[in-house]
Image (cartoon, rainbow, N blue to C red; front, side):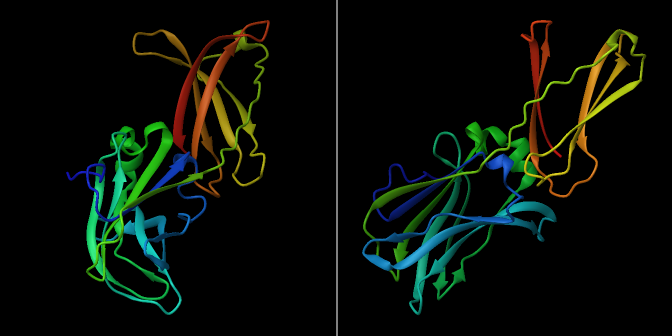
Length: 248
């Protein structure tokens, strides 16, 4: 693991933070960073492109990251750069140290991170506070070291929130394995309704438990959902609550 660049003072650094990344990673298809330039080569315009693509070498669904070059008829004979996914400590969790030539509307080498690594196994490292941080360190342009500069951009993904009350009448008459169901509509109609299903099940030592499942009957757009369930008393005050998040 190499240093993220905090101790390096050569080359140009562009830091891109994407907030609420879990909620929009595959609904937009792809997402581009704000465009940036590097002194003194201000006619060279770059951006970082992030999109979903299967890594055919490993046969895994992955997030693909690449550097894109927008500069009319300009070209770069050789660009040395480092693309990194940073962790909460600002160190590279995964990185691609590469080089290549760039011409008009050209994409650089692709860099893959598997979805299960990003969202499950190493979620705390990749997504502290659900923010994905990507750094591009340009080391050399046409064999010349660019002026030291550090710039930062933020992209915030909007999150749809839906607050609702589920009143269960005659709850005491609910029998084991009998189910109650409610559908929660998406306010923008972008996603199919989220279905909540409540039932009483018998636990491992014969105690009865309330179980709530949630899923989508029709998957028009797969999305990351977070569910907070609160139990209210007669005065509509919260007595207890639980949180669950899942890809549905």
